[in-house]
Length: 290
Image (tube, rainbow, N blue to C red; front, side):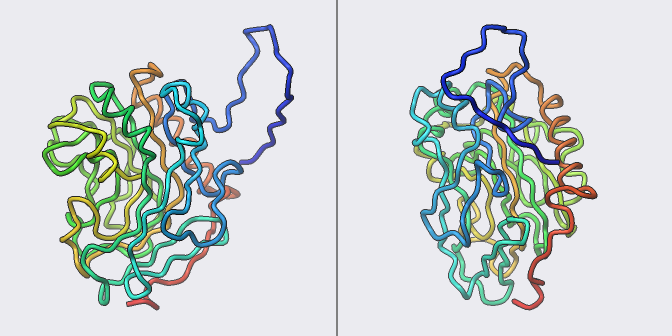
């Protein structure tokens, strides 16, 4: 699945019925963040260092919602893991592989993707909206304890203040009745090695959601011990290839979680299926790094 988009500068079409070609099929008026390290607009060169920018393919859409410039809507890597904790590599098909030690890791170290502060401001200001959050990854070594391996999401502060998040065993965390695990998402259990997609849609936020809490704790992806898990999960962490994250304000787009997830499922199957851009990706065996 590939294609080419040619932008004609200074050309305006007056026919409103013409189809709009988006930068990615998932994008809508409510798109806030799209991370895809193999997308032409989402490329990250080599192995990222702490503070390296994460391109937001949905930045133009998010700028329309937030009123801030696209330059302020890019994510960033936050990496405290050392060479003893983890090996970070890029796969031949541009995934980000984090091989995390289950023997020599240090408590409180991690590799995460951070949301821009401008998006944290927006989410906090619109916390009663419904948000869709998804993560695509390939588990290359399973965790030894699912509860202590956070995957990511819009986690604000701690377990008593949450917009939308999931924990390591692929369940809504912690107030199960407040969230809906989107049908079809996470069909492969998180404790199974392999490519998988998890998605969460929020209903009513829990606790006091602030931008500061989101900036400190919300993630695009998470490997290692971070946020509510900063002192948990020593020698228990998964290893994973991170491919894609998506966040949408469903209240703005007017789409249902099922509608968005149906688009993602089709993309997921295409990207990982025969001939897809991530099919047959290779990586270092985590067994070589105890």
